[in-house]
Image (cartoon, rainbow, N blue to C red; front, side, top):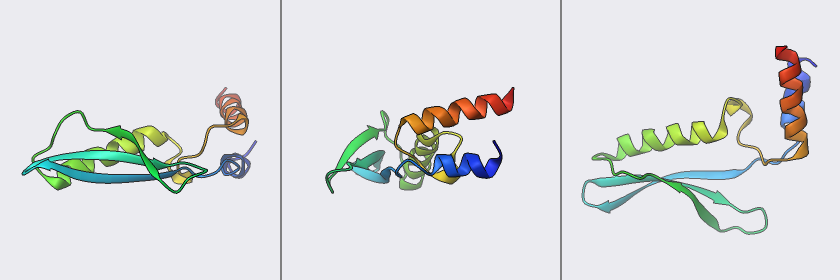
Length: 99
């Protein structure tokens, strides 16, 4: 299975609708929050929030982006995809290529 085939298999699953926001809970206390929109609703729900506060907006934003990257994993170029059997098959194919 070549890279092009792997990329096509990765794109079968729908893209998850994620958002990163920064909230100021008190003056000078910023937290990042990751939100996800459900497939059947237009409403966003909280997926994760920072346990600590940051003294600056940009610091909280950078930390939140780091968490988003960790959540998506190594296939960031394809975006966060919904879990499915196709994704499990893709994982198996990648493992076979690595062997």
